[in-house]
Length: 375
Image (cartoon, rainbow, N blue to C red; front, side, top):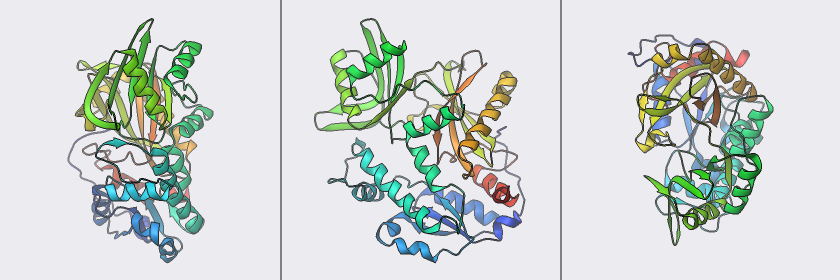
């Protein structure tokens, strides 16, 4: 399914060249650059509209011609842009210190409003590679989990709304669950994540969060907490930022580590795949975890790999107006089953993982050129 072989794709993608292409994003972000590079190879010259411009001049969208193809790209990491989203979402204090976890709901509200603006001004007259409503749902972990479950996608059990450490303990006991993941409802990239387990009077929390007297901060350092007071204090503070909690499902191991999969779904099909291996519960690559291709794993999984491909198609059915997205997937020990952990609207940045000689951006252009919009 995936390979790191040299890219040899030469398709001209005629139908994707025929329309005007627009990208909504941060012009300085490398994701926009990677997509533009793929477009250049296909003879396409996309125009880029900065999120910052839309926040002050929404009428800019009226200049986009009818029938254009519009790509919504990740806002990236620019602090000024994220501060602008928080301010637009109603935050009295929009500037944050490096790594600070605060105001995620205000950020989401601001980002959601911009996406709503895109839909209001352009839905019905342009073609989306990611529909604004789908992006909103994917960024809301609770809403996305609910949609996946409703469509029969295998997912971990969710615990419902959790407002405090005590409420978490009550919910775990009621459901007979001893291990959970707490995630910021509107977070990404392991932001504000806690892997918590409890056995009798013993408990442990593994987290990327560092608690200071004046705030919570994301770090790359994995911390293990065992004191109940410290764990309860951290979880109580995170809950005030709104969290999504689900059962911590076991993951298969390989090469002396546990792993999960990042799967990029394009045009309704699983295409690019990558293993993420870790000695701990968090597999995110920015935490310096190991990445490997999936060639050997695919052979070992056999029919389970085909079942995973069917699940990818089922998730695509949950978002039929969206060309591409990323999935984080846990494969169970024994390689006989799997569960979808997250859907990532901007999960297509997967360097080095090629499919049929193409990178993720070239595969998207290929799908458009082969008539995805007309399917």
